[in-house]
Image 1 (cartoon, rainbow, N blue to C red):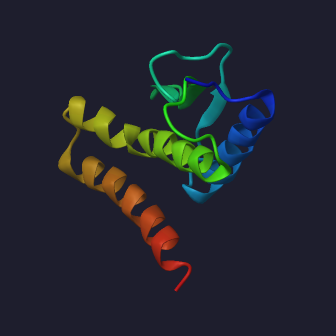
Image 2: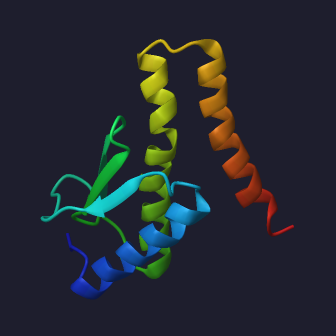
Length: 117
């Protein structure tokens, strides 16, 4: 199973920058860390209190087209987008705090999903 070429890794990084803005994640520091994963096409790890997300690409089980690379970036960054919600839920945050985090995700997705209409 292939890994991304250096050019495709650079494309992945460009999509991370684009989708970080589209998903309203500018309050997160999102960085690539060295190495490649063997157990996934890509993986993101978050540190919620630091608002730091690190990612690696890995072994691809399917095509390595631009569309597949972009879809994988969106998938990984949606994990970042939902991290605050899962963090607050685990911490048993007050209902109004959870609702605020939920609306952050909903408002972003609403803009993305209705922009092209």
